[in-house]
Amino acid sequence: MGILGWIDTEEYSFDCMLRMERFQIRLMLENPDPETGNAMAVALKANPKVMRLFERKCPEKAGKLKELLAQAPENPSPEQIRTAENRVLGAFEDFVIYTTPEAMAEKCDFIYGWNRERLFELCELDGKTVLDVGSGTGRLAFTAAERAAFVVASEPVDALREFIRDEIARREIRNMRVCDGLCDSLPFPDNTFDVVMSGHVVGDRFREEVDELARITKPGGWLLDVPGDQHHRTGRNEQLLADGWEELAYPGTFGETTYRYRKQVRK
Image (tube, rainbow, N blue to C red):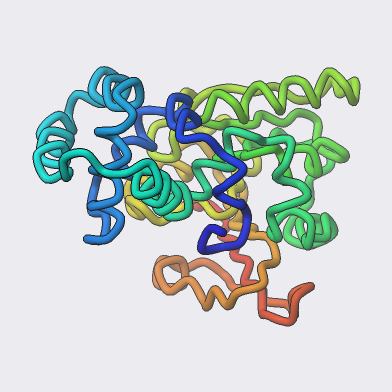
């Protein structure tokens, strides 16, 4: 199982790594712990297709990939290779489960344990233009579309974008569209949206990300951070609190406190 319990690694082939995006490859190779780094060395050497894709898609990490290959042992057994693959798949289970978005509603606690009223409590959405950043399978975006005038779901993972598009068509939703975009580089002019929201997204490059969210929000509009309920304890977001966001906590579905945040944009 993965760390969060979202996947059974035995149900995934290492070929799912062929669906990784550049930013995911970069993050995986950034600073893996020693055990994961060793496992990645074994798994990549045993899967040259994945290795070549990583090299081609993320050339800035060519040095790290070369370093990993150099440390890989010679002639590991099939059992050792699969153990290494399982270690890597479990370490990056969030990226792995994104390759099977149809499974996320059943497997991910932050989706199946979340009540959509928790979004509606944060600000008025009726008649508003809304952006959901790092939309995933659209937990927040589809909820907002029930009330908002128009919703854009921004998602950098292709498999998730296609899933959302298919859901929009299946549900015959007319006020929602999908686009590519990272949290710190969004394809919109200044002051575009009334509400910009995300959940489980902001934090890797906090200042750049929050500044970008504020840039595309209209004066007087709202920034929302709306995580889903989870089995494990998450704690308060000290970065958002230090940046002047209001905290609104509630007892979560699984007994742990869920912390939401909002901030009105002043320009």
